[in-house]
Amino acid sequence: MMLLDHPVDLSGVAAIARAVREGRLSARALVESRLARIEEINPRLNAFTEILGNRARREADAVDALVAAGRDPGPLAGVPFGVKDNYDVAGRVTTAGSIINRDLPAAAIDAVLLQRLTRAGAVLVGTQNMDEYAYGFTTENAHYGATHNPLDTARSAGGSSGGSAASVAAGLCDFALGTDTNGSIRVPASFCGIFGLKPTYGRLPRTGTFPFVHEIDHLGPFARSVADLALVYDMVQGFDAGDAACAEEAVRPTRHGLDAPWVGEAAILDGWFADMADAQGRAAVSAVAQALGATGRISLAQAHKARAAAFVTTSASGGNLHFASLEARAGDFDPATRDRLLAGCLLPANAVLQAQRFRTMFREQVLDAFRHHDLLIAPATPCTAPLLGQATIDVAGQAVPTRANVGLLTQPLSFVGLPVVAVPVRNGALPIGVQLIAPPWREDLVLQAAAQLERVGVAQAGDGVC
Image (cartoon, rainbow, N blue to C red; front, side, top):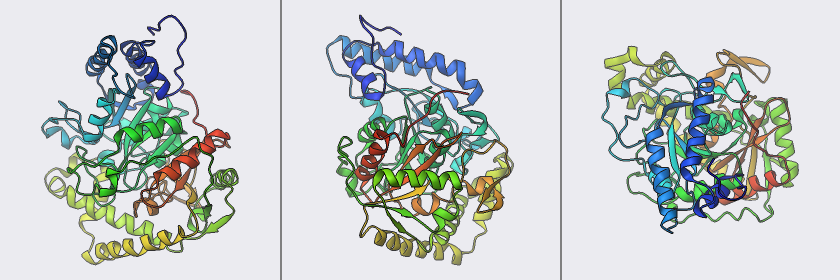
């Protein structure tokens, strides 16, 4: 790697960008090293759907040219990253994990978040595998293949942003962007042992991404440290009129103060969130709670109904979005996606309206839980990463279908749009994620708490490819 004069600290996004801006590291050489690693390792993981080598080299050369001219290329100068394949990338078709979308025109411009990252100097190296139309939790795609977990390639990387999480965990890129409707950032972060942020609904504009469920879709980053996660989050914040859900609050960026010690009041989510987790998940929550000084417990009595209502909303909205394609090209869908979308088309209006009304009621119940607490703590997944193709997992002593149930602890929270960081806790052979949950617009709290957990060694991203 074209290092100049002396060793370069490459431990994290900020350090890499600093070395590039100071001329101690060539962005082009850095990108070539990542592309070589992708070429070597991606065939074992299937994390990328398309490697954008030519674009990456052009962007890296542009960064190096700015440095040579004495200009600042930005806070993310030269840092390689990837995006889930439902983000628009100029000049290519946004497949969203489908073959039906191949008939769409190529995107004219990049998605808004991608534009913001490239303006900050980051370099896009490729698009990443996902469940078809983001409807899944395991990234086992009938068209583009399964993504393998870099910690154990026989296991799932989670979904639907599995390719993005696996690529970061394996060091194929330094951060990635995913989407989260029912848990599609937090589930793969849990399975792959990295950090993932699902911000408040409406915080980050979805302009230029292919939708799944407009009422619940969120965008957010994956990274291997809290500092990296927060830096990337800072770079993509801000209002954009292209997304009607992007709220006025999004104009005011969060200031998170990661170096400050955690001094807030936290509580463990009990009931559904404890009952549906396995022993490792409960132990991980206990370790997090102890590190944050959390002694209280709160039960959201209707969490199971929130999960059911999220299912109804997801199925109905997704079925409506793809209704024309289901009529004309049902055979071209991934069968696992098609059948659930068809079921959504058949849902009675009564069920959909009940789900919408319950969402408002449950949101008030959750907000009430924050009257005396700044943060809530819950497992991110009911278990560690299952094997690829594994039909069932054990939940509360019962064998239940894998694909439908690995998100049962994330769905009630995204349903009401709360900000959540998934932190990796490594208290077993495989990591498991813990959710840190804050009131709306308080991403600063979850990032501060995550940084505290990282400092004391409770939350740590893992290394390597199996």
